[in-house]
Length: 332
Image (cartoon, rainbow, N blue to C red; front, side, top):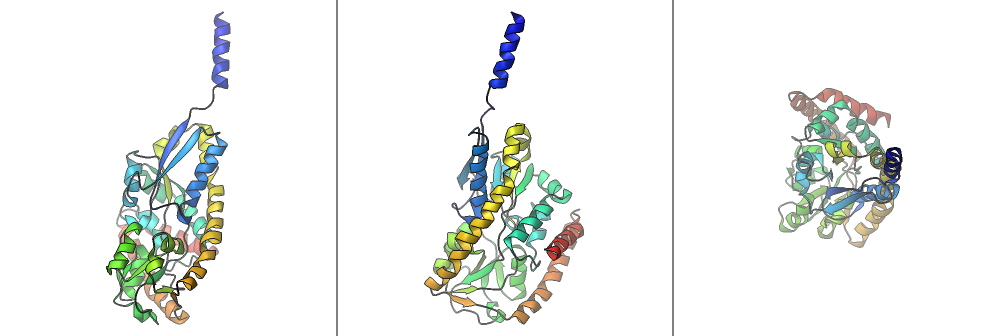
C-alpha cells in the first residue's frame, strides 16, 4: 500500500505542469520600435511555456524611466529597460557605448558590440551592484537633431542653441558651442514648444513617438555624433529563481526577439521617416563631410580620454572597455 501511494504521488508530481510565473516589466512612453523586442520576447516566452510564464509589460505604470534601475535593485519588478545616459553614475561601464564618434554604423553593429560589452566582467560587476543582469540591448541608430526656427547652414549654426542631448552626444554639442540639456524623453516636446530647448537629439523612432517631429522645421541628416545605450535588464534573484524550462524560454528567445526588433525598426521606422519629413516640409540639413571629420577629431579622443580618466579613478577597467569597443567597431 505504501509503495502504491509513493508511486501515485511520484506520477502526479511528474504529470503536474510547471508552476505559473508572472514577471512585471517596466518600460515608459508607449509601444514603439524601441520596445518591440520586449513585446516579441513576451510573446515568445508565453508561446514556449504554454502560457505558464508571462511578462506583464507596463508603460510607465511601475516606475519612471530614470528609476527603473532602482526598481530592479529592490525587486519592485523583474524586468526593465533604461538608458545609461539617464544616470551615468549608476552604470558607468555602459557609458563607454555612448561616447561620441565611435564609428559604429548600423543597428547590427550596435547589437553585436553591445552584447559583447554586456558579457564583460566589468559590466556584469557594475550591474550586480543593482541586482541586475543585462538581458539584451535596444540597438539605436546614430542620433540627429530636429529643431525649430531657422535651419543651420553649417555646424557653426548650432552654436548658441539649447539642445536636449545626453552622454557623448552632449559632448559633441558642447564642442559646437551649443548647450546640452538632459531631460527624459517624455519631457522634450513640451520643452521644445516652450522654447526651453531649440533642438532635440533623438533617433527617428523617438522623434515620431514623442512628437518632436510635429514641432520641427529642420532635421540634420548626417551629424551622427553617437547614440545612447539602453539595455533591458532582469533582477538577478528573479532570474535565479526560474525553473530550467522557464529560464531557457527566456534566454533562448533573446536572439529571435532582437532579430524581430531590427527588422521592425528598418521596415516600420526608417521606411517611414523620409516620407514623413517630406510630408511636413521639414528642411533637411546635410553638413560638409570635412567639417564633420574635423568635429569628430576634436571631440572623440578628448571625450574618450576624459571618460577613461574619470572611470579609472572609480576602479573601473576603463581603458580595457574602451579598447574593446574600438576593436569591435574596427572589425565590423
